[in-house]
Amino acid sequence: MKKIKRPASWLTKKARRGFRGYPIATVAFYGPTADLATKVAVSVVPDARNQPDLLERWFSEGTDIRHDSVIGDKVSSFLRQHRVLSVVVADRIIGCPHEEGIDYPEGKSCPQCPFWAGRDRFTHERIQ
Image (tube, rainbow, N blue to C red; front, side):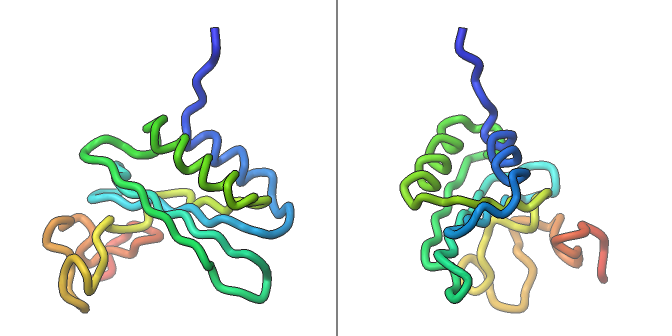
């Protein structure tokens, strides 16, 4: 019987290997709360002299994207396609999946994700 790997654990394992050279992928999870990830954003940094030149996003509807094997396969394929040698993964959900200035006005809180209003996206602590 073939063991099915959970996508988030595969990414964590790849990230634990540390710096293996360029290109580097950054992986960040976003969601309406600190417990539910509905978006993953993956960028690729080609070398030390450049900013990320590729960015791909995947979304889920109400299910935790970190445990979605279909999305995990897409992320894995994206990393292989761009021959990523190193991976950095955020260790928590780092904010709302909606984009300021696109999905809601600049300088405002997302009306769809009240959990994040007045909250630090890295520590999840209240700042207001």
